[in-house]
Length: 485
Ligand SMILES: [Zn+2]
Image 1 (tube, rainbow, N blue to C red):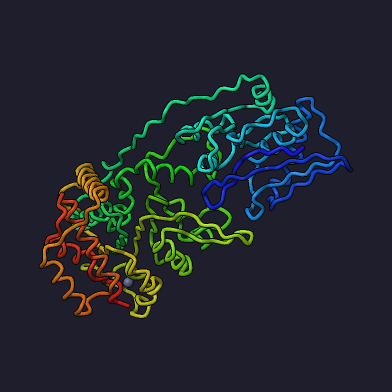
Image 2: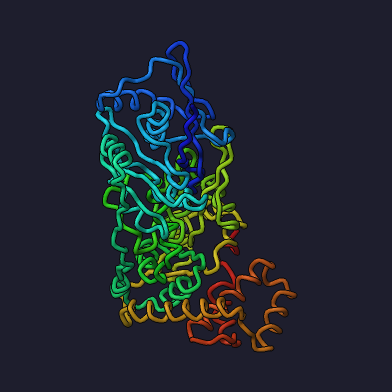
């Protein structure tokens, strides 16, 4: 007899349904797994064997063949232990063939416990999309499952309890309570910023439109301080974005006390980071961990050039394409890039009060670490100078956040209604004139219009005025660093 069990594997961060066929035949004792299993899957044999033994079931000393379908997909993960055990038990007649609407995921311990697994959320979603609506999973992953609509969940702690429930018709789904979506407001941290009105305003515009922003300035000017606070004023993620953020988190580690992301991620890797660490290799990299949030590169010029250049693909497509074990995988990587840097090795190149001690060659070399196309990815470029005693008002993060959320809501409303922003005729004329004069590239031209739209939305308008364009030009028109090059 051949038994069939549905399960799933992860490709990138998406779950994909697979089917496991099990066949037990007469012959020399041998357990073969085919269909591109990874090393961990091959080791499942021992765990399954031991788990059955604990239940008092003698492992068949005949020929067992288990085939994972589709064959082209590489199968990784110890979560296939449970479907493999179910396949063998069904074949042996110790369990009835499960309904086709059932899917199984879970790692087994040698004592037959069903252990929590990585990536449960993606696996459950993948099965759901393939029409599997009843999912048997480790009790430790129940929290992750409760965020997926229209699936019934059957959590178990041991293989024995699971088999008993299936055989006694006492199977009933668990109905976990719905999670609440509340975000933690960190906007008040902006109160630490005194004065620096230009930089604070630029931060507000960047956050409202998810525009990439580069802060440059001498050490001690507060550029890192403002850059770090940006995460607190971003609009909260919507439901779909929360699911995306959570799936990435779940793919990295076992989440026993899984909580849905209430905030967007902030990733601030050290400048010694490698290219693989940035874009990923076996595991997703920093750009994926920063998905739907901020990737902050403090002192950008200290990062290796190849690491910085590797950002170009995700910055333009929102994805990272990699090859793993000869198979193409892709990870989502749509993030807001926030950079800070000194304009030269000593940091005082543009400073009004402290003289720069660097040679022209040293300055050019330093800035040259960021290629022209890389500098061009920043929509806003802000120079912050050092001030001896900060003067001016404290930044009001809560007010900024309110304005940003209103702008975000207005943009969503327009998207829903299928309308677009309109422009005062003078704005288009002016932008065209600047472009024709060769003041900026086509890419920059488009970015300036996008910035102008965000500025109008912050003012609760859907029509762009000349003042919006002027402000956009002031923040995103020229890059002082590019002029040095
Ligand atoms: Zn210098």
